[in-house]
Image (cartoon, rainbow, N blue to C red; front, top):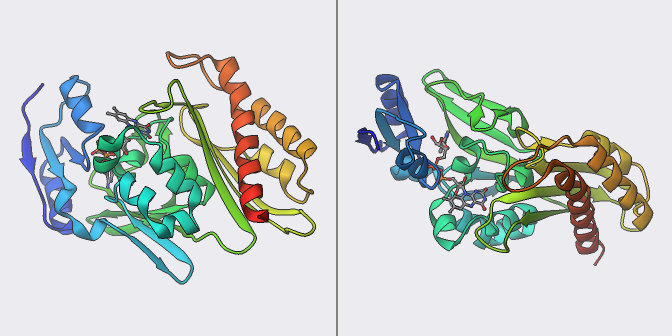
Length: 288
Ligand SMILES: Cc1cc2nc3c(=O)[nH]c(=O)nc-3n(C[C@H](O)[C@H](O)[C@H](O)COP(=O)(O)OP(=O)(O)OC[C@H]3O[C@@H](n4cnc5c(N)ncnc54)[C@H](O)[C@@H]3O)c2cc1C
């Protein structure tokens, strides 16, 4: 393990100054990814900027139908939040399936995005809600869609000197529903072989779908949306036959790879299955 300097800024402004003064910095939130990478000599930062004292980046707000989550909010807090369970159930479920209690108590939603793993669990859920992230730097703040954050495994489009401050999206409303599914090699403490999140808006009487957003993890170099699958659903009447057709379209649309956790062929198959399962859950919850 290489040596590094340790800083714990008290404000976002202080963090921004420290990023400028220490070009080879690494931001630390819960540390569940960073500390593993340092111990395994995967990264060698000269300075660690621990964001843990930035209380303004912790917590969940709902205002005017919009949910805003601070980047330092832990998975446990998301999972236990009545607001998230009610207005973003796919995110609550995803957060509750991250790692183990220890990982969820420390790991944050900002760290899950910043780590840019294709298998990150909260990211597909947030992408299904079409979430926007706010990024702060010395020049002010900018917003981008979360789906545009990722460059590749472990790589984001964040510029040096930038940090994610919050994530926001519209709270799930009337005739809307969402769900998350994860397949790992074990039931607990398992990185996703594939994960899937869906958001739908449908007329409960006619069963016609007005809006649909699907996101998948672990089937590409970054978490992805699946527009072909979404288009297959929108404007049509929900039925077992339609959902099977959507599953087929999703499986055909993704191009996963073989790795230690699974084969490409299996991932392709399971991607459609998980989207179908998530859609069935979302529809069941909405129509009950
Ligand atoms: C045993 C184990 C099991 C795990 N299981 C899962 C799992 O099931 N599902 C899953 O999705 N993940 C899992 N993880 C990965 C990890 O726990 C999550 O990715 C977690 O959300 C990371 O959050 P963190 O706060 O610990 O991030 P950190 O480790 O502190 O940071 C991760 C990365 O994000 C950057 N970063 C942190 N905060 C910000 C910010 N505000 N702005 C910009 N960049 C930032 C850091 O610089 C770093 O590059 C597991 C990890 C371990 C060790």
